[in-house]
Image 1: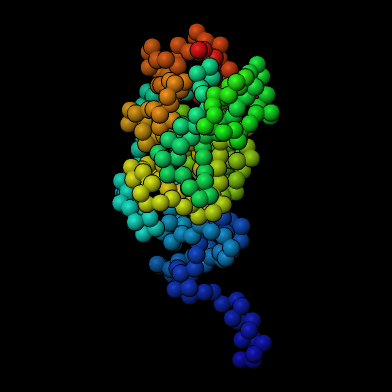
Image 2: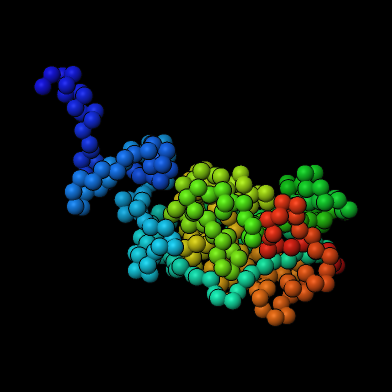
Length: 323
């Protein structure tokens, strides 16, 4: 064989099974590179052409994990065990990781009393502690805006005020987080159905299915989505080892994440961490299908404000004023 023929042959010959199974795989690189599936024989892997500069690497089994809705309990158990081993390897902690399902007959909602919120940001840090957000770079799900009294102009608000001086004269404070919309733009924007709305109203993300396209970030009108541009860093002693698959498990680099109403807690009868830590009682969380719940009382008896109501996202997060 001539040198030219050998060169052409080497360029077209498929990689060996060992080469394929040791190459880093990403769903994004698979979709972006458009690699072809080649059936070689029983037990043979698929030929893939990953882009070397992309970040979220998968084993072959993880790459071809089925969508969440198609997973059997046995499949989920294997996935949970794999993730626990990864957390042990990367962070040296033993995680209690479970797939916590929504409870029938439950629909969660949130109400926030703007007249009582003092802007202390304790909710921000309680959220980080519960949900295992990266500390470097720091990711926060809750943005607390300092607003001029008498104004609802969010564009002129201050997100970088000093929380040690609050409450400041002539100001009030508006925490903003995921509104768990009934008509959620983010779930519609996702091209691979990695995010959806569960029956209890919580919009969730399967971080094993996310391809990192960030369409959901662009679609969300409440700035509620975050993206892991870098590998999350969190000290082992800061990790909350009680984790939920669709909730507060440690996310990998290259995926979009968000508030899930602390589903690890709320689906087990507890309050979200932000509501539990609030020193003024400005945060109200409840199942709105339960008779006599406090959210329904607020909706029926208070002047309620829906952020960006004209967009018709129909959120499960409401603001009201009351001292």
